[in-house]
Image 1 (cartoon, helix red, strand yellow):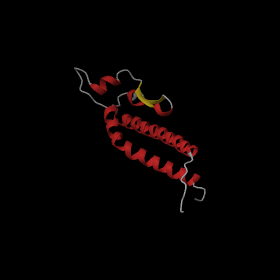
Image 2 (tube, one colour):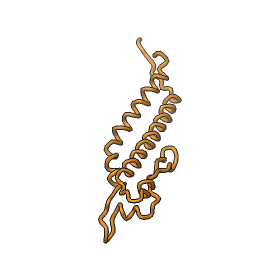
Image 3 (cartoon, helix red, strand yellow):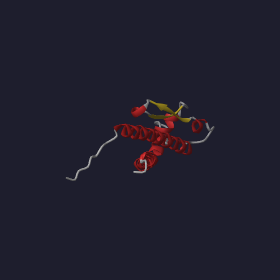
Image 4 (cartoon, one colour):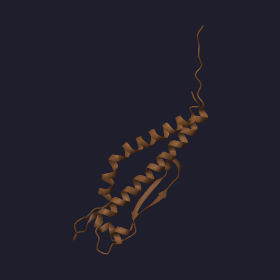
Length: 126
């Protein structure tokens, strides 16, 4: 009789899951930094306050974590959406629209890198 066993080391799979979570966090950090950079580029520059006001902060943790992108200058919202006396000059919306199509590609790339690293570290010559 010919037979074989296939065994799964669930501890290693848990390690893989944790490493991909770290990759997702890295992706969110890099993508949010890019949105901030683009929003700064798209900002009107009179005094420079609005351009310097763009920032990001980490929110949540683990699987529910991410980054909030914001501007601390009170009149930014009027520039973004316009008023009855001033047309909109959006910054954040276009910055997000520019980065959004890249998200799946970059996340896929980072996950592939993470999986390849995991395999290389855990193959044990098999």
